[in-house]
Image (cartoon, rainbow, N blue to C red; front, side, top):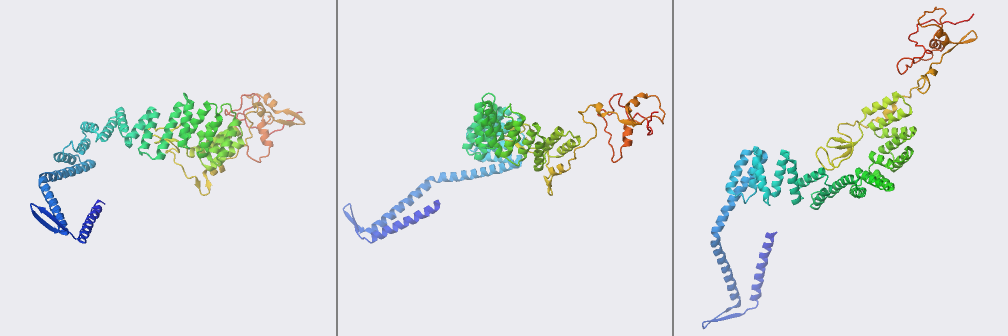
Amino acid sequence: MTTILKILFFFGLILALAFGFSWIAERPGEISLIWEGQQYQTGLIVAVTALVVIVAVIMMLWWLLRTLWTSPHSVRRFFRARKRDRGYQAISTGLIAAGAGNAILARKMSARARGLIRADQEPLIRVLDAQAALIEGRHDEARRLFQEMSEDPETRELGLRGLYVEANRLGAHEAARQYAETAAEAAPYLPWAAKATLEYRCRAGHWDDAIRLLDQQKIAHVLERHEAERLKAVLLTAKAEDQLEADPAGARDSALKALKLAKDLVPAAIVAAKAYGREDNLRKASSTLEQVWKIEPHPEIARAYMRGRSGDSAVDRLKKAEKLEALKPNNYESLLAVAEAALDAQDFKKARAKAEAAARIASRERVYLLLADIEEAETGDQGRIRHWMGQALKAPRDPAWVADGHVSERWMPISPVTGRLDAFEWKMPFDQLAGPIEEGSISEGEKALASLPPVARSEAPSVSEPIAASAAPKIVEIDSRVIDAEVSEKSTPANTPAAKPNKPETPAVVASKESEPERETTVVEPFFGRPPDDPGVKDPTLAAPEPKTRLKLF
């Protein structure tokens, strides 16, 4: 662009001179000059041409004289520039060698650069020396060079970065924190310094300082707007959790600010609801939870919503769960919330229906465990309970708070593994591999429901019935007279052998002989494996087999 402007200016000057000469030529005249008694006379065009030539000659002479006067400096500057170029070439080669791990070549190029360029004039020589020292394992010399660079305003940021890395390598975390904070205060646009300082302040619980640093990063355009707002919402939520017990109003304000920045942040909604609960403002607490539930149904939201008021009965909690289902119908978490509340309210029909609907949507461990609880409370059928427990063992786990492979029972603002901010996500743990949700046209939940065994119909007496009723004696008719068979059993001692033709049969044998063998009879053993110790009930395993006889009284 500059060259084009120069060319245009040159052509404009030529055109101006040509126009001037043509204008003068069209207006002829004469010029007279009297000097020392002599008169000199010439034409106007000649005089102007002579003037222009004189000016050009003077300019050329001035350029020639100036060039001769400055020639020694020009020659010296030429050789100095050539030497500097060779020095920069050596630095470039040395940095490439240092990056490749060639410490010998890097040290050689550093020595050559020092011979061609002054070290105080070019800070890259220190950088090359420090890199070479690190490659060779001379960390003390590298730290000394980084310290010198941190004292120079031109290389301060580079020196602090080197000192920070060395402090972390040695495990001096406090020194590393100080270096990072110094760099972040001087230059908040440095990503490494801002990130490290932010993590240190979060670990220490200095939420206000972390928020202030995050605002500085946002102004410096280090972070994108949406990312900065998300991180600020996380910091405000963490601050609200710390304020909840001592300052519920402050916790409420911080949590509401976080929800404005991230509308789907579940922990912020829970903290805001708890803060409203401290102020006995249950309507606002419910409204806050409902707004987040519409965006992101979450089991913790449902739990906080249903148990927001301590005096509610199980039926009241069921009504609240049904309201959540109305806000987010045909949703896995909505169905589970209603099923759990219905189980607490002893509404087994509704609990089973909602739980089975949730199982059809997603085959997860939690829904099968809930079905096992429903089965145990309603039928007590051990076979069906074992079926649901087996399905729970095979099913993938439900989502949980996971950060860097660590599974936590509650949300935290930073990762306990790496210290990264906003690391926790609500998702399935990595150690659980989810199988295919559907195989063909039948889902895993439908398969589990289809394979559910029917309720076992046992002929054994129920637990609530007395044992004496289950051991009632059989009545045997003997020649129009009714005699209690149990009395005849008692009349014969257990250790006295009776005559085979006259010994009556046991009640169990008589009942089994007289009944038609339409189906097999399952003998249900008592809980402790043997009949109760009752003289009126005889153990059939100890009785000898006897032929079937009829007793007649003469």
